[in-house]
Length: 107
Image (tube, rainbow, N blue to C red):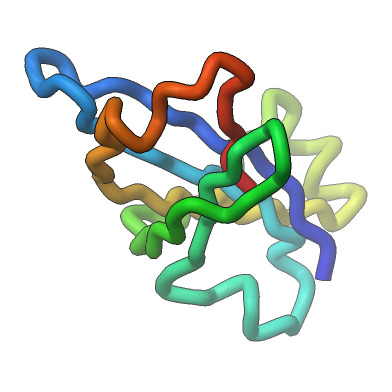
């Protein structure tokens, strides 16, 4: 199976320290790999300075849709079928734990 995607972290408006984390994955819908239909995934938060894992967050799948192509005829001729899966959850990231100047990353 081939998959690619991105992670989006967005602050919740009016809620200090609360964020929505979403992962958008693009799967080859022609694949028979069962991982393409998983109901949830886990992301981890790491401190950049020493790569220490601070938190894990389970994200539930909130949507699974076909990717619309701008040229459907071309996609059909090449048997291209891509599924877009979106996984999201909210998390509180307290400033007492996430205040390091060097920052953090999510993977």
